[in-house]
Amino acid sequence: MADTAAAPLLTSHKTRPAKAPSIDDTIETYMGATGALQLLKAVLLAFAWAFDAQQVFISVFTDAEPQWHCTGADASCSAAVASPCALPPGAWAWDRPAVTSVVSEWSLKCAGPALVSLPASSFFAGCLAGGFLLTTLADSLLGRRKMLLVSIVSMSVAGVLTAFSPNVWVYAALRFMSGFGRSMVGTCTLVLSTELVGKRWRDTVCVAGFFCFTLGFLSLPALAYTFREESWRNMYLWTSVPSLCYSILFYFLVQESPRWLLVRGRKQDAIETLQQIASLNGNSITSSFSMLHACTMNNDTAEESGGDSVFATLHSMWERPWALRRLAAIMTASFGVGMVYYGMPLNVGNLGSNLYLSVTYNALAELPSSILSWLLMGRINRRSSVIALTGAAGVWSLACVVIPQGAARMAAELLSFFATCTAFNVIMMYSIELFPTSVRNSAVGLVRQALVLGGVAAPVLVALGRERSFLSFGVFGLVVGCFGMFAACLPETRGKGMSDTSIAARSQH
Image (tube, rainbow, N blue to C red):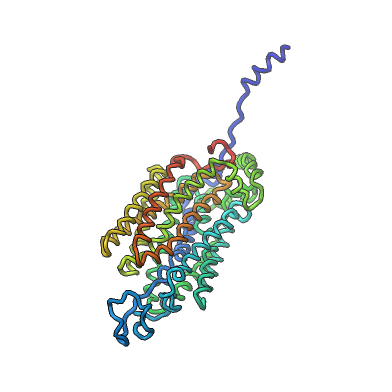
């Protein structure tokens, strides 16, 4: 009886077990402060965004509708004629050689908006398909590094083959393949670069990726102007071959994410990677890896719930209402941002200004956007930033409908694109913080697919907007402004650490 009476007292004062170290703290402890060489490697990794940008926006020039002029061979041809489609073949001619654009080379001008927009829409459809089919491979079977390497190589090979397309149907199919391959480039680059550096530098390497994307975007008008009298096929060769060379450099210099290796239970591989990173930072690991083992054992349950199925991470999110709500809200906001982000550069031809300068201005708008994104992520709430930026983008896009062609309309378009670029950057960094390690790459991949889904619809709206600007600028503004409000359903993550627990952890509710 005495023992029975004492039992509650013993159990009521039981000492709580010590909390296992987080993956964040463990990695920081072993690899030390992020050094200059490690930062340089992260920036080299971020340069994959430059090649990604080239493939995303290359059709702005290769699929552009060239200018034409009357030849004087037919009296019915005059400056008052809006389209040459009703004119006899000898009454008009292109201002430049027909090979400078797929529209002129394959006589697509009079084929209708559906066929003209088919290659660009096929590219974004490929991005969408690749994202849904490949997104979980970086979290499960392949990991971040292998998935990124496969994506870069497949995108580059498809780009080289595109330069030899004999007709618009083969061209559209190859653009689909290119989009399918590049679907994971941005996601894996963003996730891997942030997981290879310490907490202090995560925002910096994110912004480095956005800067590299801008550099790739800026290179396109320079290349297009250089080849303005030559075949559009040169554009694909000069963007795809350097990308292949980059993939070789990437293979030898970039390591796998130690965070992913820990979550997958590959302790020895994680130890070797941490030793390499520590050595690069000028440190040497002399202590035991007791923290690492404790940390890994704490996260083994994450793998038991997910298994090795490629779609196990998506199934895990489906079973957790909180994760599904977050994913639905941020994907809805992303759809509107993606429609404007991918659609505005394609729509600059409808502004009535110089194509090369217009695209250059849009590319340059991404530079201050990257800086603003970095400032916002460090000082302002993510949720309110997304709502404010998408609202501003919608207002300026709608303004383009009522402002006549000229400098004012170009300024409104740039302001809308600038706000959209900033919202794009914030959403990508926001999505990394919303989901735990075990499903982070999958969740970020799905967010990117929502962005791309908006891009699928954009080329068709651009083609329709050549006759009525409301069908492009107006729809863009309404969608991005209204859908951006869904960010209000998301939790705020500023100042909180990245989660490395199982998706089932109650701390994530």
